[in-house]
Image 1 (cartoon, rainbow, N blue to C red):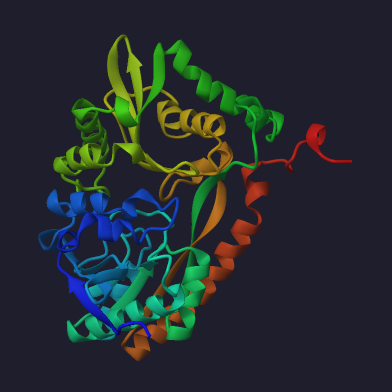
Image 2: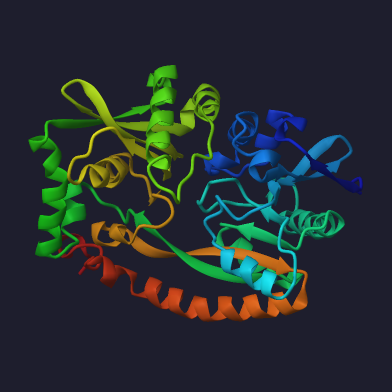
Length: 391
């Protein structure tokens, strides 16, 4: 008979050994779940109490062995989440209900789909998830949180949370999927002639502008690339009022040093000078677009650096999915299809929860209709193409 389990809430990921945490990750886990990434977020000052991210990682132990965990944070605002609930906070205020702090299960500033409840392969995943979720509810109530939010879980995980009293929300991102393209030209063949001309013109603009692009990966990365990644991020975040600088320079330094195997940097150069680039994370099957920036403005440069160049890489490397990040309806006409994004929520104040659940129900009807029509909106023809279909 296995020993009883106990829950510990950690104030920092560094309170658990790196090897013990990473042993919980499933194969092909998103890099933001790795101990190295979360530690870099914390130790760089990017995700700390002073910035509204108070670590409260839920861990489950048997004797002295870590068997399950969920990265979690007490949040004191709604910035950096990308499942927007500002309207919920406003509704709470109108009802005279305090909305912050709230408990969030996820990873700061990382709007990508990934498991939120982690466990050893030898453990019962459903049982450990239930234990962690019960601990989340208890901790949230004990520390004065208004609610519990599980952001960007895969659909099956989001559905599994409903019997425990959480309601689901469906929002939308734009993802590129690889059904088996052999080349960039085969990808283009899925568009009508007008769209093909558009993509060729935008991607080809770099040649006339004297701009070349390359991707730097793994062992080729060095500290100078970490500095470049920071400069790309800082250039964009400083330019827009809606995107304040939330990440510290040290995040990039630490991440490049500790997990280069999961990082790649797209670099655009003109006349021997770096003018733009994008910082991405990856696994063998997935690419995650994270931050981009430019030091010179050129037509279509953003599309080429952030989309086209990496699509070409994904085809060549046979990656299945490219998640370029939140937002961006412009991605649809460039082959990225509307994709359902899931979250699960529990609000302890009954009146507010009823109102929010009704909003989510109505929102889901609109989002699901758009995702069903995704291929048509993106202008994609059926796959496979006629010349490779079975008769």
